[in-house]
Length: 305
Image (cartoon, rainbow, N blue to C red; front, side):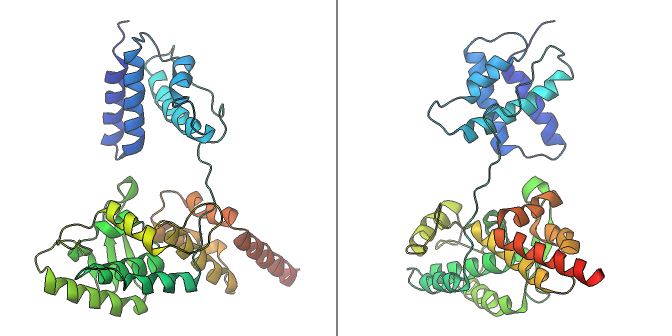
C-alpha cells in the first residue's frame, strides 16, 4: 500500500469533517502542525503512538494539560484513520491527564458589574464609552459569547420584539435569544447614537471608525476596565459574564418551587450549548449551586416521605 503524506491525510480528514458542519478551527491548526512535524521528520508509514506523543510534548516547558489537549486532537484523527488504515496506532487516552481541565471562572457580583459599567464612561471617543457600556450590559444580562455579541448585525437586533438572532455560532448553530425588558432602553439609546454617527454601518457594535469591533480591541480595553477587581486564580475575563449569567439563572430557578433540574435543557438552548452536559457542568463547577441543589433535593424528599 502506497502511503500518502501526513499533510494530505490531515487535509482529507479536515475536509470531510468540515463538510459535516464542524469548524475545527483550533483543532485544524493543531493537526496541520502535527502533519508538518511528521512530514518534516520524513515519517513514512502508519501513524504511530510514538510519533503522536513526541509531537504532543512540544513545547517541552508547557503544562501537561496542554500536552493532553494536543494528544487528544491526534487521537481523534488516529481513530478516523483506523477505519482505512488498520495498522494505525491509537495514542493512549490519559497519558498526560485530562485534556479539558476547566478552571473555576470568576463570578461577577452586581457591584462589580455596576463598577465596570461606570468605568466605561471614562473611555475616550465619540462612541466608544456608549459602545462598551452597551456591550458589557448585554453580555451580563444574556450570557452571550463575546464572539456572538461582536458578530451581531443590525438585522439581528430586534428591539421591538426584544429578541436577538445569533447566527451560525459555535458548531454552526443559530438561535433566538430573548432580551429582558430592562435591557431595551440602554440598547435603544446606543442604537440611536450609533445610527447618528455611522448610519451605513452593518454591525450593531462598531469601532470608532464605524467598522466591526475587533475582539483584540475589546480585550485590551477590558484589561483597563477590570483593574482593581479582586480575583482568586486568574483575572476576570469577558467570557466570565457568560458563566455569571448562567449561574444567576440556575440560582433563581433553584430558589423556586419548580427547581432547576427539569429546566436545564431550556438553559442549554438559551446558551447555545451543543450538549446538555455542557450546561450540567455549572452544577459541579460551583459549590454554591451544588449545595443548593442538595438542599432542594432533600427538601423534596422530606415533603414526599
